[in-house]
Structures are given as structure tokens and as C-alpha cells.
Length: 59
Image (cartoon, rainbow, N blue to C red):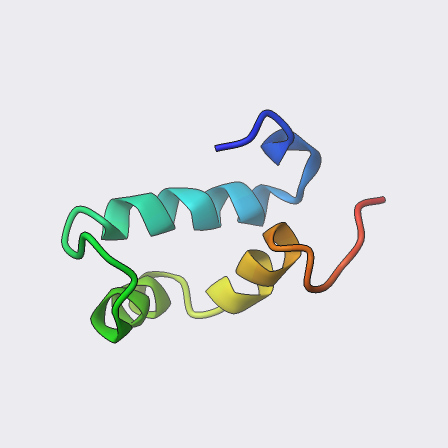
């Protein structure tokens, strides 16, 4: 995790938590892992992309 995470929308923090919790069932980034993430947070791609710098801007 980054010390900059609080600067992002709260949904980004929620995504990080969901992501890490899903690793309790899948110790990798396999398709099954991402399916588990999607089942818990269907819009995870939006928040993942913001954190990855692929979309969105910080205000």
C-alpha cells in the first residue's frame, strides 16, 4: 500500500482491501482471482485503473 492512497477516492481504498482479501483464496492474479474480485466489487476495473494511472485525475 501507498501513503498516497488517502489522496484517491475512497473506492480506491475499498478496491485495495477487496484485492488483498481475495488473495486469501487465490495467491496469484489468475483469472479465478479476478473473477473473485469482480464478484465482490463489479466496478473494480475503474478503481484499479485510477490507481495504475491509466485513467482519471486527482482533484
